[in-house]
Length: 387
Image (cartoon, rainbow, N blue to C red; front, side, top):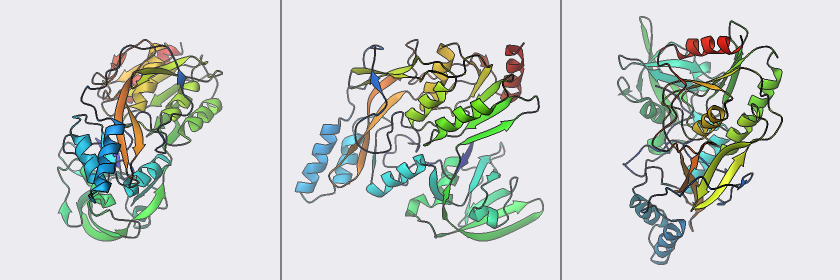
C-alpha cells in the first residue's frame, strides 16, 4: 500500500467505526449546496439501498439547531446524530476541515511533498518527492527509508497513519509548522526538520511506455483531471493503445470521472444513481475515442468514482479491466451545511453501472485477475487488442 501526504483521512477521525478517506465521496460537488450540477434524471436502476437507519440531513440539522438553542456544540450534536446511523461513510466536518477537503479536491494540500509505501517487512520507503517541495529542497530522494516522524518510529504503521503524522493531523498543523523526520539511505542515517507548506499536485500523470503505448495514471479525480485525460487521449499516437491506471485511486469528483469516460465513449450512459429514492443518470459527452485499444488497471484501492468509471468502461465493452477486485464503495454522499458552518456528509443512495450492477460492498471483478506484475499483464492484453 502506498500514499501521498495529499491523500489521507480527515484531520480528526470523528467515528471509530471506519476510516473515511478524503476522496471517498461519490458525488461531491465542492460546495455544500446539496445540488448536483451536470446530472439529469434517468431510468430507475432499482430500489434505493440506503440503510433504514441512515442519518437524514433534516434530522442532523435539527439536532445541530437544538444544540445552538441550548448553548451546546452543534458540531458535537451532529456527530452524535451521525454516529447512530451505523453508516461507515457518514461524516461531519468542522468548517476548517471542510475547507481543507475542498482544497484537496482542487489539488491543494498542506504537507512536505512525500509519497511513501510500506514494504513487506513493514519499513516505510519514500517512493516520490514532489518538485519544489520542502522534502525536495532538503535533498530527500525516492528510495530513502523513513524511520521516524517527530520522534515516533513509523515501521509497521499503516501508510494512512504515516501520512497523517506528516501532515500533523492530530494538531491541525498549518503551513509553516515544523516536522522532524528520521531517514536512512544505505548505511547513512540522519534527521532533519522540515516546515510544512501549501502544495499543489497533478493528479494525472501521462507517459509513454517502451512499446509506444500511452500510460495514463489518475491518482484521484480532482478538478480538471477529466479534461487532462481527454487532452492526453487526443495527443496520444493514433495507432497506439492506452492503459488507464486507476490503482489506488480513492475517487473524488464524479463530474471529473464522467468527463474521463467521455474521452473514450461517444455519449451514452455512464451510471445511474438514486438520491433518497429519486432516480437519476450520468451520461458521457459525445465525440470520445471509441476505436483505440484500451485497458483499465484496478486494485483493492480503486474506489468510488474510480469504480464508477471502471464499471462504465467495462459494461459498455470499451475497456478490458485488468488487476484485482476493486474496493466496493458505491454509496452516494451529499453535503449538508449546519448552523455553525460545519458540514455533514450523509449517505442518500447508491449508484449502479450501465448494466445495473450494484458496486457497494461488492466491488468490480476484473476481466483478467492479476495481483503481481499487473502492468505487464495489461501491456500484454493491450498488444493483443491491437492485433
